[in-house]
Image 1 (cartoon, helix red, strand yellow):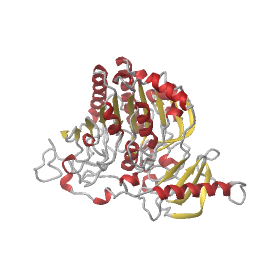
Image 2 (cartoon, rainbow, N blue to C red):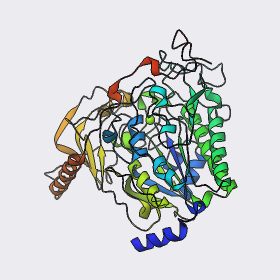
Image 3 (spheres, rainbow, N blue to C red):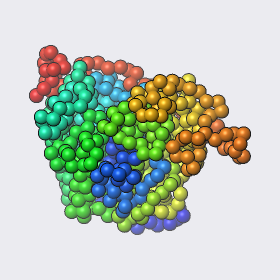
Image 4 (tube, helix red, strand yellow):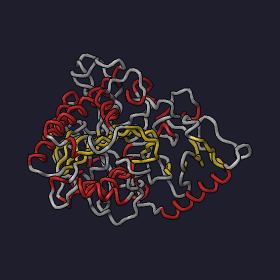
Length: 500
Ligand code: MG
């Protein structure tokens, strides 16, 4: 099998010429649930382009991110390491956060750049801004960046998120923070950002980046973490009122349209057969927003929880002519994207402890996933509590469970904030193949062989925990209002004067 893989790679990837290296595009949706896409069963979502990726690519049923909230999940995707190692915990980074993704962490962009890749990020960064832009994408291996460097509800948003303008918006967001900026590389281009034109700006940026890279015969890596589907939803004139699903559906449709534009650009530039497009999302749906939040389908709870609804995500790998269309039930994770892209490009792995495994064989149909287990940390990981849950093969064991505000409002009491931290010894064990909704814990007394499974789970947990060195908490460093991005840094009074 290894020989077949090497044969494939050596034919497909001539390392002596840059043009033959594969291109990579990672599309990362925000707060999107397992049940939100048409191709994952949502009856009224309009996602024709993502559905096309799924129909012509490999669709995952058992794919996990590493955290039920934004920043830690993004840190893991870009570094191939659990967020506890890089220190992106607890919770998320804020506009004035002092910390960010440590510069000594190696991102996918930094893995690919030495091979001659052009690299760009467009969209929601959320891995820190810091003093003088210390943690912006341009300091983490990306040649170019266009986007909002954090969540778009981290600023006053009452007048920014609706179309047409006379429709009253939903929610106020963080009114005490600077207006949401649009940054180009390290400079503020617009403050406040024009949300209704944002998707066009992102599409144009992506189209231009792909076109120029192809023209220059340069392999490229485009990272597109979208804001859409995160609260508060917005959509421009092309999508508003067009879905059957209201504001969430309109936002999803607008995002899907950009996915379509990226695919069209790949076709028009002739790069489509040389490009791996990988789509997934950072965490589960924010159910507290009710119909304006996403949907985790048949999975339990959503954002903020370590139930599957918080961390099991839609995922699609698309590479016409190389990845055969189909569905895989193999276990895989955002952690595995870095080692896979490194392998496909022939780049050396960073010399740190990685948690990701190479899934090239799985993508190419040459073998199974090398991932056997997935670890579940809560939004506030600590050495004291360690893992809240662990999935080994088809079994998931919960050592602790807890509800959260993010997933409140659903009828299931386990998801609600009133469900306080509860320890389980022995752990609650579910068979996720027979019971993907985590409804019916298995009984150690009644199920023969389960004690052996539990022993293996505890063994995997102990081995993983022995390997875990918690990095210094970057979010624990706190915030400084003076660090919030302001287009007129010396103006008064802040934050209202930060408008250009
Ligand atoms: Mg998110």
